[in-house]
Length: 224
Image 1 (tube, rainbow, N blue to C red):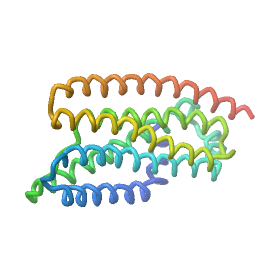
Image 2 (image 1 turned 90 degrees about the vertical axis):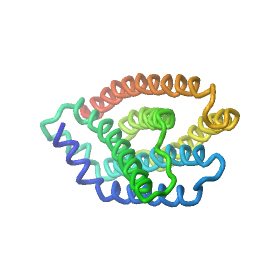
Image 3 (image 1 turned 180 degrees about the vertical axis):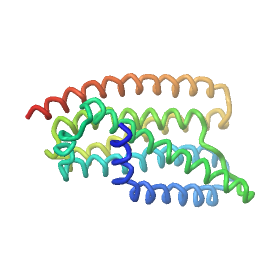
Image 4 (image 1 turned 90 degrees about the horizontal axis):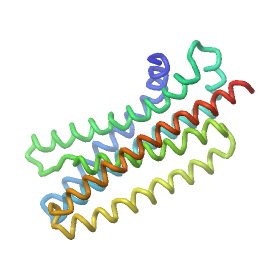
């Protein structure tokens, strides 16, 4: 498992650095533009969450596309790793990328605060919802990838990106209304926390089911 994760890191680290730089730039510019404006907290939370999902998805898609394009799955058949480990490494590395970018955003905001620049950290609710959306997306994508590897992946990636934007926009558009209606901090915060926790639990359940399905698809491909 460690070897598989290290292989992923070596192959994707340049892309990870690039999108990490994008998050640093976004955090700095965003907080500088919003400053003390009304509802700046809402804007920063929405953009923080979207940047985590978007950048993590970019690395994820790049990794999966390289896997299919270079037919690395054929090479992996000859290494001493079980199908479970190969599939699980995809899920683990994808989630690790999300948390790497989370740490990058937190360190960036901390740096801004040390420079006496008004900035807010990502909230628990925003983090929970963003992570849930990310887990949901990879739960849908990975089984499809192992089922159709290399076939029409360009179209699938396009649909996948559109789906990401639509889901994120739908969820946070409604949450933005709730924040505004309660002047950002109000009685609805408890409801939002329950909602964010609930969809995170659901996404974890779907992730587990997705993992099992992906293993089945990968084993079938091994037999071809």
